[in-house]
Each structure stands twice: as structure tokens, then as C-alpha cells.
Image (cartoon, rainbow over all chains, first blue to last red; front, side):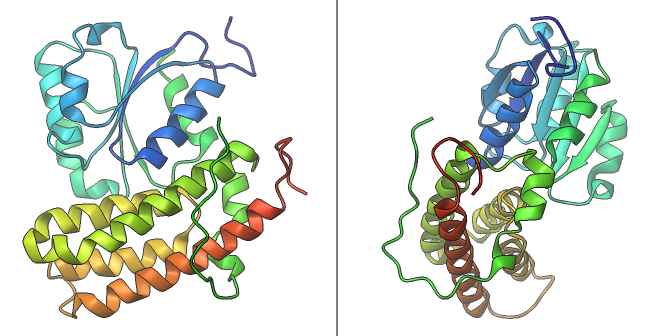
Amino acid sequence: MAADSEHPLAHCAVLLAEDQDFVRQTLERFLAQAGAQVTAVENGADALAIEAVDGFEVILTDVRMDPIDGIDLVAELRRKGFTGGVILFSSDPAEDFADDAEDLSVDQVLTKPIKRDELIEAVQRFR
Amino acid sequence: MTRHRSDDTQEDPDPDPAALDQAALVDQFGVIDEDVVTLIGAFIDKARADLDALPAIIAADPVRARRMAHALKGAARMAGAAPFANTLHTVEQRLCGIDPGPTEPALAACADALKQTHGAWCELDSHTDLTGQQG
């Protein structure tokens, strides 16, 4: 599948970490419909258990999760040398974790509710 | 996706259309098809179970309870259930001490808002046929 207007994220490898089933399934649907190859996990610990993180172009993670939250997840991935795109999302205002986001070279912060088009546009920046 | 029916054994009040904002859902999902209705139905069932569990969790571990309320609030916003999300925000604020009021009436308001959301979901479900189009 080549990237086109219907599948703008064709072959884009995305790691998605979100603990709420409904939100995770919704975002996974948005990404998959756009052609992305999505690996979805329920929290930061499950994301860190994935060995080949370098294979992902973009990591999308919720901020508030247990046992490892999105900030600690990104910090650990950056420490390991992950240089790909990072998008944080939360239902809190982005200002609440702006300092952490800047320190960790987070590329974008999205606030719930996240719209399909908004998400696809955010991920497309890394193509 | 297997069609999921939200548990409708509870009697719902006359549904408030604002309990599930269909315009917001269309804006968010692009189209309200069978899968979207199914996802929201599953969310309502999960939210009901979480709300039932919250009083005991508040008593045992308020920090965990606050995180649960916060996570549920984010999911409710994604589901187009803004009134339900707003009641969860009140619970969250009370559990972290920003709002000094008691949690019991806030939880009761959550339960009422969720019933309204379920009622609105039933309406939506009855107008969404199995070909995935809204009637």
C-alpha cells in the first residue's frame, strides 16, 4: 500500500500506549484506517518491554498511566537513544506538563478528545 | 468486529440528546458506523463497572481512585459524553482536594449522567443499521 489521500500513513510504524480500552481502540482505528502499522499497548511498562523500539517512526502515548506513565516512558526511550517522533496526549491542559515535554524533545501535545483528522495530521509530520 | 450490546437491563430516563453529542462524534470519527456504536457501548459498560467499584477504591486508595476518575474522564470526552466527563471532573477535583465538597453526591451525579449517556446511546444504536450507516 502506497501513501495516498486515503492512506496517508501507509506503512508508518506507530507505537501507541494508552490504558483506557476505548481510547486505545479508537486511536488504533484512526491510525489503521489511515494505513499505519500500529502496535498498541496498555501502559508504559508494556511499551518498554518491546525490544525493537527503533523500528517505530512515531510513539504516541498518554501521559497519565500506571505503572509507568507517558513522561517516564519517553524519558526512558530517549535515554535508550530513540530519536523518532513523540506525541503526548492527555485530558489535562498541555501547560501542565510543558516543561517535561520540552526537556524530552516531545514534538507535539494533543488534548482529549482527539479527532481523527487531528491525529493523522500530527503523525504525518514525521513521514 | 462482533457487535456489542451495552447492558440495557437498567431503566434509563428519557435520554438527553446532549448526553452523547452526535455532531462531536461525526467531527471526531468522520462517520458514526456500527463499529463506533459498538466501541461506545463497550465504553459505557466499562464505565458502569468502574463507577460501581469507585466508592470502595476511594476508601482504600484515594490516589488510585483519582487516577481512575481522570482516565474515565478522558475516555468520556473521546466518546462524546461531555456531561458525564464533567461530572467525573468534579469527582477528580474533590479527590485531589481542589474542590472541598463530598464525593458521594458527585458520584451520584456521575451515575445519573452515565444513565443519560446510555439512554442516548440506545437511541443512536436503534438508528444505526448493520450496514454501518446512520438512519
